[in-house]
Image (cartoon, rainbow, N blue to C red; front, side, top):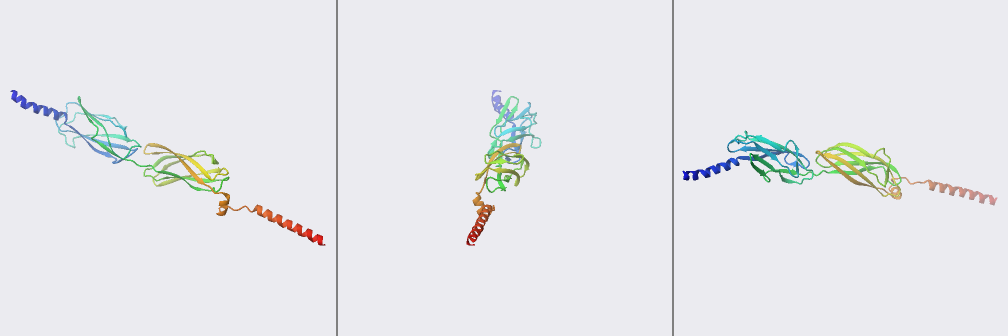
Length: 284
């Protein structure tokens, strides 16, 4: 009997170990794949029972760490009793929605899971990975056109924003900030531009007066917008270079003021006529 027990004991221990480790977890897929930084990704897991039907309820918990946070639903899922020797069709499928941080870097990032069956727990730290691809948001700002050539004048400037990135921009706001170089003549320094699709532009005109003796007008602006449920704020320091009156006149951009020359010419002619008559009168 003792010999039989010694022979059976390893089999019992092996059966216990197999029964304890009968649950097999695999990651089915992620959607989208890869996921952009700042986006929401849905991750699907498959739980198979390779041994006998479980006697205790099975729990699966996702424990997201940076750059992931739970976007919706519960982190802890109660799977109940899982039938033994289940194939893929009978396997339990669980999905989680995670938000990827907008500052996440490119590459594969591990997602942590904990599986519980009765008093037994298994933690998966480095078994499942989510592929992240960071997308650079490329919003450019510049002065598209200007009526201003020299300082000490008023005119309209056109500020333009270009979406040179791949993602569409929503709820775009533009604000022209105060500067010592100019005075705002428009009724407002704020404009709501709305959506700005990828590979598109939006522009707005502002009327300003440029103070005298200014060679470069500094135009600070602030923009606020949203990309994939993430809000962004950014400031730009735009510049508008002006010409001196001499340079502008030389280039033919402004007409030279000939009033003084005309007045001097008239004065010379009048003096000449007066002198001529005076000399003629003396000769008589």
